[in-house]
Amino acid sequence: MEDVMATQKVDVLIIGAGAAGMMCAIEAGKRGRKTWVIDHAKKLAEKIRISGGGRCNFTNMDITAKNYLSENPHFCKSALKRYTNWDFISLISEYGITYHERDHGQLFCDDSAQQIIDMLEKECKKANVDIRLNTKVEGVSKRDGGFLIMSNEHEIECEHLVIATGGLSIPKIGASNFGLKQAEVMGLNVIHPRPALVPFTFDQDTRDKLAGFQGIALEAVIKLGKTEFREALLFTHKGISGPAVLQISSFWTPGQEVQINLAPDTDVFELLKKAKQDQPKQEAQTVIATILPKRLAQRLSEQADCKGKLADQPDKKLHALAASINDWHLLPSGTEGYRTAEVMRGGVDTNELSSKTFEAKKVPGLFFVGEVIDVTGHLGGFNFQWAWASGYCAGQYV
Ligand code: FDA
Image 1 (cartoon, rainbow, N blue to C red):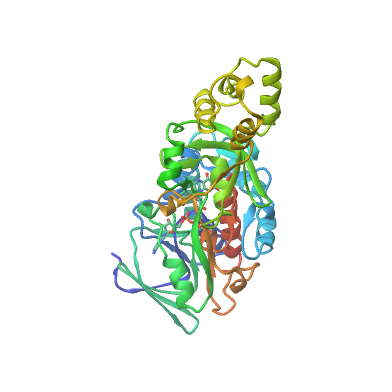
Image 2 (image 1 turned 90 degrees about the vertical axis):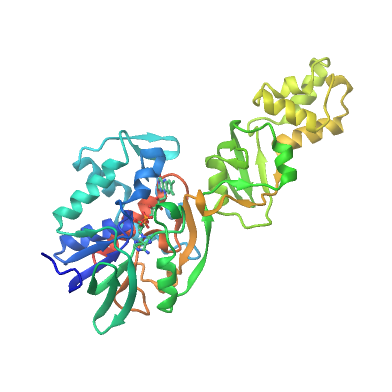
């Protein structure tokens, strides 16, 4: 029987058995490196399991550096070229995992995200990687030729240490600030982390105005400066959500207004003006209901005080109503935070790392992969592709 407190000697120790950590472990193991992956969670890769509504949007058909946010937008290019979406697609194909494409090139498993976890676990086994769950790190120290890691289970000596502990979102399934803290302790700069791909919330005043909109979903354009997304927008009881909102949230800083076009294919003022001419007895809300959900049309018309026949509405009021649809300005009071955010923006400063090996320039032997690094993908499979690519690349060098 294994003496649990005896010092274990491995070549590569990876902290975090998520998407990036397992990918890195597989590659290191294939190179004959004695590799352990430890994770404090009870279950393997919980984020993969819950991703994509249980079907894991594992990559995208169109991966470019433009789909990532970072203080250094060039950093991700090399890894994304060296391990592409097609590399991952061919891996899942070997395991007979079937998939389908949805809007915007997003690829999802036909069956279940669990298939991806099972595949990674099998690949780890094939590469003789040892995965240890329920393992808490209690201390990390640098020593000649490597690191010494104290955990609740073992004392582990390793030559190379990989931190793959992900971002801060969804703490209840194991997210922690371990990676960010460890980077700081080792003297590396960390770009201020904040929730991204996250719904917006509003103050009570705005919430009162939005009362009654809950549950309405529609395609909209949402804009912040020059950045815009055209996708579904959903009104929730706290604010707004849906893909369009999640996307723009990654670009948002507190205090900024977002601009929303609820009817991107229609010039609403022109529509109302024409209706006023052609059918002057009609009400504004009836006209608006031809392009927006009825409940929304009714509330927005009320809020613009456009009640009664169109013939009686001055153009000024019609303009105001049209603007509330085509050019609605909203000031979020905040976001739902890490409780629901899909990812964290910010993280270990890419200037501290080699974009080839993912090793810290100041701390030889220490590597970071995945979401813990300041590289954040748009919604649509880009974050997993970053995890696979960064894990794969570091796995060639650890
Ligand atoms: P990941 O979070 O996968 O793994 C980190 C691991 O480290 C975890 O297992 C954790 O338990 C462990 N850990 C943390 N702290 C530790 C500590 N102190 N000690 C030991 N272990 C520790 N992306 C995408 O591309 N398509 C999608 O469909 C989705 N869907 C989605 C849904 C939801 C609800 C969320 C929250 C996120 C997504 N994402 C996504 C984002 C995606 O899940 C995420 O970017 C990747 O999982 C990041 O991979 P990492 O391996 O870096 O971290």
